[in-house]
Length: 226
Image 1: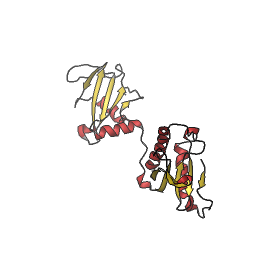
Image 2: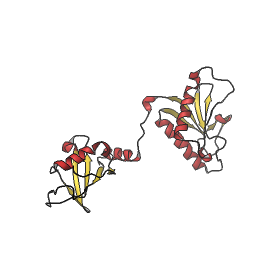
Image 3: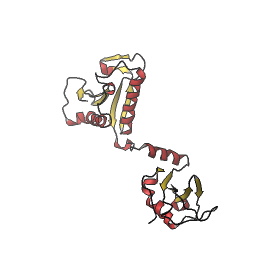
Image 4: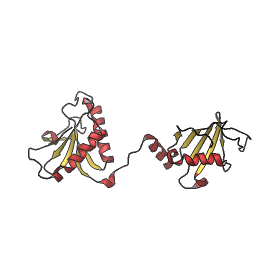
């Protein structure tokens, strides 16, 4: 994982190395060289100070072409999300054979020609990506919080009276509808949407969970009434 020059002419200023150094730091952070089959090297093209990413000599070239393409795709996508302008290349210029193309038509290296911080895509977890997708299609994720039936007062809903729920599902509305939140409770497997009839103690629990509950899913912080 070292930076090398494609030609023996040394860089004359720190700025000459800036892009290649930035690419190298990103690759070291995102793809530690822990597997020989997926190892890489960053190089600087002294002709225009662009950078390239190639599989280093230790790469297992006996792997099927699809595996090699998968690794290159992961590197390419990661660099793009980090703000780099990355282009997969099928020619063999980086290997000293500019007139030759890869025999299977698949890219063999990445050409990185620039970096723009405004193009950075913030990292998102899988749950955050799922929540974003659900918001786009109009389905908001519910945040489930376990309740202790014995610790909370009984409550009424539209169908039953005196229920003691053991689970609450909070759905947060970023557009302000329903005062920003809708609530449903469960007794066993039976769900009870509450509409506007949400007890204040239960509403307070939902508010307390709002910041980390927007992504939905089951909460590890079971909640009892104060």
